[in-house]
Length: 189
Image (cartoon, rainbow, N blue to C red; front, side, top):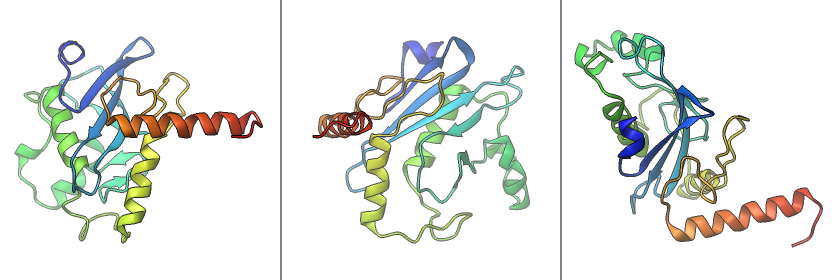
């Protein structure tokens, strides 16, 4: 509840459809000159019933060209589904989830991890992409509409949870979504 009242910078959460154990999360990367500058990631976070003994589960709803993203899952040391990978790498115990971690710390680390791709050359999924392809993928995050019927996230034009994005990004997202809606109804424009 504290995160709802005092949100983190460039990261917002909201309870998804009155289910306190499922949260919608938006992460905005405003980092001029960085690979994912202006990306708006939308995630669903499930808090297990035995939290904080077990860590939250993350489902990345927005496609993201990061070398540690596999489908909708993030290969992250705090994610229980990938603990085996980090154990095989003989990683120190302090990188894994434990009961001293807070949800706020978890989300801050996830934001930092997803905002850059420092391991792009040597990791699980390798994207050998041109800068123009990365920029095109980032722009798609601006108009991403969440397919989950419990969620009303509509990209940078109507982000749920509400998060401040660059005004030009918001404007272009609104135009693109308006064009998409007109096209769906057979209108010209």
